[in-house]
Length: 313
Image 1: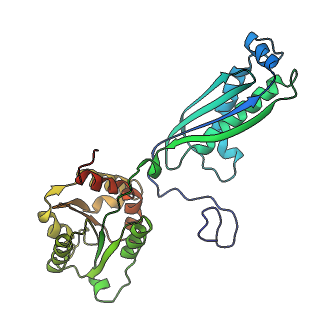
Image 2 (image 1 turned 90 degrees about the horizontal axis):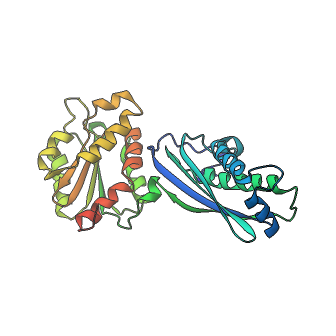
Image 3 (image 1 turned 135 degrees about the vertical axis):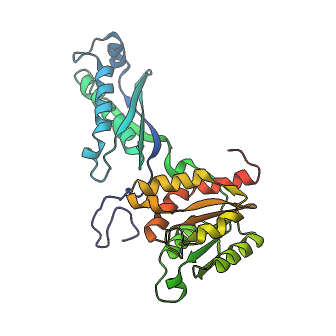
């Protein structure tokens, strides 16, 4: 039961926690139709229906319904919708209904688009039922969605290695957690994690491990730990001089997401760059930093390897 997003360990319903996801532009479009007699459509076109302007009322109703989706569907998230549009196409024996919804949030707007179409069609039914009881609503479906992780399509999964940098973990005085989170996250995303190592906060050990992996053709190296302000935090000083390119965009995305959640994230010295054709990302050593990094990096970072191999931006 724990693996089902809408059920807890006891089998009770629960809302999905999206607080760890970055807000991105998200769009969804849905469609449906309401079948009716040709005579009803002709009356609608002439403005001859007793309840007035059918399509205007239906459009307003659909927009209002999209805004109220979280009140109607129990486990939907309440979203700040940026734009809603509803259109109609009058055919011989039916009216096609379509809706598009946009937001900049941490989760998608599929349910809002589907709700808009459904309520718009129901409103048409209500406005026309006095003259036509044969109407039928059908084929309500999601047509497109964009934004979030589903908007980044790449089949390439880099060969990956993870280096945990910690005196206490290397000495067996503490248990690694952040590295395990990273390993599980990248493996779940389909990346072959070919190496996983624990080392102390020693420049020689850190540098030797990363150098060996780069020589062996590991494409993505992720380190955890040694990015703070302590005297033993030397990961950045060790690896930064080896970078042949700096990936400021990756750093900025990680900084922005971390600082949006906890103010002390500003004290981290995380960094990202390339050593030859390998990408190296140095992260703080906490489990929360590891989870945040997975949200930001996966799957967006995979597109970098398409670019390295000659693909477009």
